[in-house]
Image (cartoon, rainbow, N blue to C red; front, side):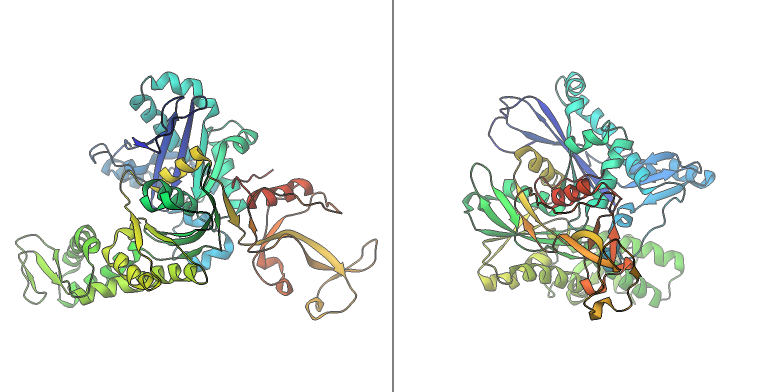
Length: 536
């Protein structure tokens, strides 16, 4: 249990639950708000299959499905020997890394290295519904066991629970809509209308910002117009966001000062570089395949647990444990299970990934006077990354402030803080939002050449025009409305990130066909505060 602040809760009793579902692991935190008591965060740390791991909060994002499309095992249990044997005997299919499949089409080629196949008989919506149901079911059990009079409190408040779901900044209204539908399908909320009131979406970057606001001392001195950078360097991506402080009283109000930067990099890729090196090292030594596989696993585990965190400079050599105390190989320079790895070689593992993180921070610094730079996430614990980033930003008079990825400082906790404190933040649009229209044949312009001409009551028109509702890279501080002269009922709403002259069906995503007024309202809600949106 970790307090958010010392201010007592002055409203009625309430439960807030936050989900952070990552590519490989998921976490859940909640707050039980009681009048007169300071808000505290509880992280669920009791999952089936992890009872012997000392209260591990992260649960693997895994689900086994049988041939009928029914979910059979989740999380850590999906890795147990008994489940693996049953899955092999019965021909089950494993859904893993399914979050990657949800990235918008325009982002996939840029950010996804390799997609794992998913069970063909199960929809993405169903996979999320099943996994969220699993998370929620065990969250309830944990709450009732750990909170005084938990069963009665849950029963009385369960119909008013508010939910916060973290999501990558690059996701839009389609991805958020799927998660909202999944919450309904899982039975966590009873209807879409209820989900619009109780399910809230917070970007991972914004959740990270609120985590920093609570756990970092420098923010106590923040002033209006100050700027802070949050770099969330995780396992497989680094998201860097520049925020401007618009208000400090009664609550800190943040807004995105520019479009965030996202790099596909992280400790996963450092490990992959190390794996390639170790595989070649043991292969060149003429070892058999079984020995190579075993030694590579040993070396990677030792590197990840010890050298990877502590490495700071290329002058530091590190000891890597491999093969046990009885393993000695002069050709490999291994003595009694200890391999000396040169610092210059370790630096090669890190450098491509570290360079991308540093570049993402520097890109957000350009043209702005920044007061604080925060580094969080699993990769953010790397001493080498911190040292390299400090080298770069020290020239601008800045220093990295780190927020350790310890049990008390998780992104999911930031999501709880965001929802509890209602700290407003604006969004910067990453796409232009609008509708497809028909345009006049006259005058003839280059972009019109080759377009299909269709008849209309007012004369011949070209198809493929673009009527913009919200422009790309627009910043909104509050919900907004815009009067429209004409409303087209049943029109598709699209999001578009290309050039107007290139507007072809393959270049923009059409969202679900909606009543025109609802579609426009959907777009405007997405850019405002709160950041949650809905599908009709």
